[in-house]
Length: 270
Ligand SMILES: Nc1ncnc2c1ncn2[C@@H]1O[C@H](COP(=O)(O)OP(=O)(O)OP(=O)(O)O)[C@@H](O)[C@H]1O
Ligand SMILES: [Mg+2]
Image (cartoon, rainbow, N blue to C red; front, side):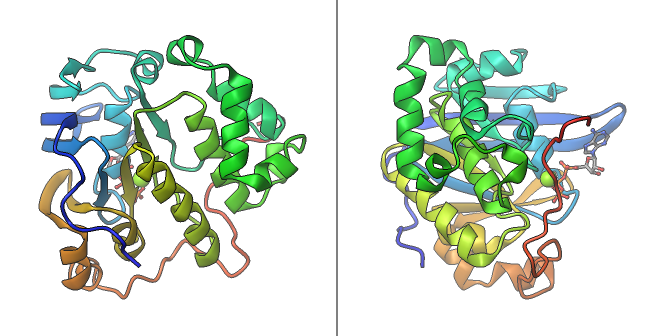
């Protein structure tokens, strides 16, 4: 399934983390994280529940303030910037659980994604929306439908589409495969690969190593807030990292037969 070679197409560092520490209250979660992501690369961070994957993405996107360390986008400091300022510079997160506005339509959710300085400077929202609809034709069919009425897969497409409306240079994805049937995951990952081939850099967090490594160029294993292993995606796949590191065959505990979701969207009255 992996069509990529281990080495990324370019070695220009776009995202650079050094000695990153962060946590909640007095509890340290990220411990001295270093990471370089090259332009055009797909890097995946894999790790068990609670290892700090979401905290890492939230710290990069400005949701969680780092205690210490360096976060740079093309050499420009991101530490201390708010979420909107980080988005304006081109680092956009597709959050864990999608976090859509259920009572709003598909189109309205997409329009909200365009709200950023980068977006204003960039192309008209209508043009960007057309591109999202080309990538995900099902969203176009459902453009006037409320987000809450979409299937889990369509909601994930909408979450990715909304992030694309902000014209990212680096897209951060937190468990996009969560709760989705394998075929739907395949469809979404095919689109992510297409976006990468057009030059978008991806940092992808997943619990399911096999799924993530089938898309990525490179994988890192996170354990208790530290990066404990790093290699080319193909090597990690060949080494069967899923069984070695996570002690099971890759079956997900959060997927149910009917595609039930761990994270429902925000509904009216919530
Ligand atoms: N808002 C918060 N307040 C306090 N502690 C938190 C908060 N969010 C996460 N934590 C704790 O930080 C640690 C890392 O959590 P994080 O969500 O980053 O892990 P994760 O690798 O994304 O896990 P999962 O695979 O379940 O999504 C966990 O011990 C978690 O309980
Ligand atoms: Mg998480």
